[in-house]
Image (cartoon, rainbow over all chains, first blue to last red; front, top):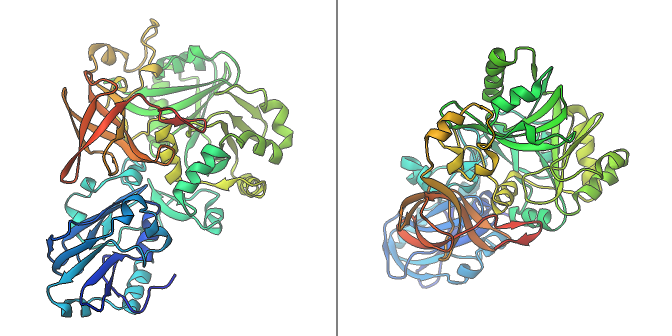
Amino acid sequence: MSNPGNLKYTASHEWVKTEVDGTITIGITQHAQELLGDMVFVEAPAVGRKLKAKEECAVVESVKAAADVYAPVSGEVIAANSELDSAPERINSDPYAAWIFKIKPDNLADVAALLDAAVYQALVDSEAH
Amino acid sequence: MSACPTTEGADGFIRNLSGIKDRWGATRNRVAPFFLKANMTLKTTPLNAAHRAMGAKMVDFGGWDMPVNYGSQIDEHHQVRNDVGMFDVSHMRVVDVKGIRVRAFLRYLLANNADKITLPGKALYSAMLQPEGGVIDDLIIYFMTEEWFRIVVNAGTADKDIAWMKQQAATHAPQLTITSRDDLAMVAIQGPNARAKVWQVLPQIKSSTEVLQNFQAADCGEYFVARTGYTGEDGFEVMLPKEKVEIFWYALNKAGVKPIGLGARDTLRLEAGMNLYGQDMDETINPLEAGMAWTVDLKSDRNFIGKAALLANTPTRKLVGLVLLDRGVLRSHQKIQTAQGEGEITSGSFSPTLEKSIALARVPNGVQIGDTVQVSIRDKMLAAQVVKYPFARNGKRCI
């Protein structure tokens, strides 16, 4: 599965989608879910929480490991995907649909500065060897 | 995102397959890849190419390049509980002890009593202890003849184990030869249909192995076949010449036996309530505080290494099972609060059979089955219930 070209990415393996209303939606990448394996638990940040860029704010756990999810940019949490409480495996089956939380960014320009799909893919390729 | 790596350091065990972030320590906040770099120094089994051809995700498992899964770890887990799967366990070490009066040496070397096995081929699980009582390794011995016992030890401890055995033999049984069988590979075929599949592939060994009881082995020439395993399911562990193992592996696969990675091996053994060396016990742990009292023979008047230390130190802790009542995942090294004091999880994961998080935990002796304890997970205290383990065996839930 390739990384969608309309998304932005972080070096810590989050994907970021900018919505028409200027909020952003965040999940973990195909590469990340593949490394972690079968997902069994997701803990999203509380709605209303103010986050700084690169702050640990969510946890995803697979059978074999726990992993932090970081805020890609600073902002306020406006939604968390409660569907993942009972179906964390959706992150495995469709990582780019199984969003974890949404943020209203303090500064939308921060999002533009994140990695594009090609740069992120190059990063993944370099880490794999 | 960052995560625990699926590799582990010096003690050579898969701690981090069920690891948790507090083992990350200072490094946990860095933005770093958590998968493995290519490492030219990793040891490989003769099935390495087969694993890769079958789509395995390979990890550094105590210095060995081993498959953690071939797709979904949970599917692999259910495959073994409900049908059959095969594991490459060639990284484990076979040690043959031969010569006159082997049994007398093993009676002294091991915490369990080699006198318990008198039927040829019969196996015995035992700890090998330091004089101070700590666990050097857990192992299985097979009684073949009065002049040949076979021992299977853990991969990460094999060199240390063999050095210890040779050191003890030099003093107490210099007539014995202790041989590391580096010429052998080992495949575990596990699950309710495991034996039938092995007989389909190796019909010539059927007559000599269908009579095997649980925990008994037969020496069938090139194939040494033991009705043992690490999953809580029926099955065989087959030791065979390295150069034959790839053909055997593919023949099993052609017969419908799917490969299973070390990830599922860990959740299967945890559900079955089986200890993992380096995690549930090690050289700093008294076996009586690691759920191993059933394997330590203190009743006979036999002397063995570590006995005096065990008799001198009354255990104050014990190993219990936990089932998490709240949402989350129990992991090794999480701290536990009980009414009787602190405890710690030694192995924890998600149980595919129970569809809940389960753990083995070392707690103060006064903790009772049915108690509710609090587990510290990140910044929260979550409730877990103390249960009698195993959690699942033979395709079924036990709790």
